[in-house]
Amino acid sequence: MKLSKALISALIVGITVQAAGCKKDDAANSCPCGMG
Amino acid sequence: MTAIASTIACNLDSDILSAAIPLFEESRVEAIEWAFDSLDFSEVPEWFSDLIDAYSKEGRLIGHGVFFSIFSGRWSIQQQEWLDNLKKLSARFKFDHITEHFGFMTGANFHYGAPLAVPFNSKTLTIGRDRLNRIYDACQCPVGLENLAFSYSIDEVKKHGEFLETLVEPVNGFIILDLHNLYCQMHNFSISFDEIIKLYPVDRVREFHISGGSWENSSLSGKRIRRDTHDDAVPDEVYQLLDSALDHCKNVRYVTMEQLGSGLKTEESRSNFYNDFLKMQQIVRNKTSVPNDAENTFFPPKIVPPGDIIEDENLYIEQQQLSYILENSTSYDDAVSRIKSSVLAKSDWGIESWAPHMLETAISIAQKWKKK
Image (cartoon, rainbow over all chains, first blue to last red):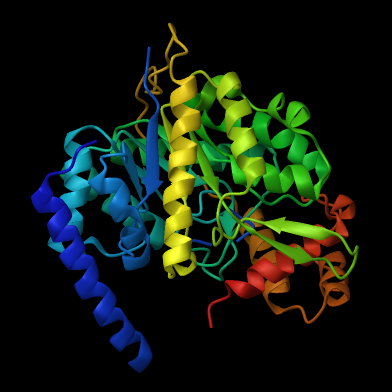
């Protein structure tokens, strides 16, 4: 399925911002089907 | 003729999404499966909501629940909240189907922890059917259940497919056949694909999951136990299962690759994820030309509004005791001793036939996911 270029750009920016925030937050502060 | 959508399990996880970007850019991802109950939707950023929306508008969004705990003996406020949330999300997005895991969660209130098996009997059947009907009532789209990776005994492995079929029948539901879960069962109980696939209602399979996992050594048997940890690349054996299973299951619409973000932090792992998806997609495309003239829509033949909530206090007590023992035993021998003196002894749980290496594994799983 084709996604718009605008959506893919927004995803890349969003992921980058989230990943950067994660590292900072995790430093300061998943799915279990019965065999996890 | 129905095309099969090559799908990724896609959640708000920067590692999963980073690995998926090249696939999105090449327009390879034909559907996404969203674990809709893993986060409060009000916290979801607009860009992720837009991604879900894009697939929803094309009828290519499927939902996968984790925390409902379908077989909990006692109805809980969390289950009602889960349904309310699903109803709200189903009004906002168009799900092509909704699925949940088989089993009950081991956590003390059964909404965290890991899903484990229940006895296949009339009381669990009645509760399971009631819960599936409530899920359908909330989402108004086809509803399915995923086969479990874990079993205590070979007898349970052999009855799982038949019990799943009986469970989903009233809502004309379907099955997600998780092929890595099947691989776990095949390895842990030394059963072949040809034997095990005959025990599943293949016409009710609407989705396959493929994923990786890990090995754990049993200190009791010396045997390697295969676990469904979703933290590694898809093994070749699972691709072979996909190729074979596609020949048996003519109602499949989705093949979904699952991997946890924790296993996608390096460039190498993300490159493997990309290559795994391409390999999966090639297998799927080679098989998609099989026509199916009698496709099941998996909508219920008639709508039966949910009645009084069905509960079973004895089942609840059994689940509580088992969860407590698994989460708190200090050793395998300690767990065996406690189970033998619990209400589980000489009951439908069939503890007398549990394989020691699988009880050992159940303890390991329950303690891994125990709420700290």
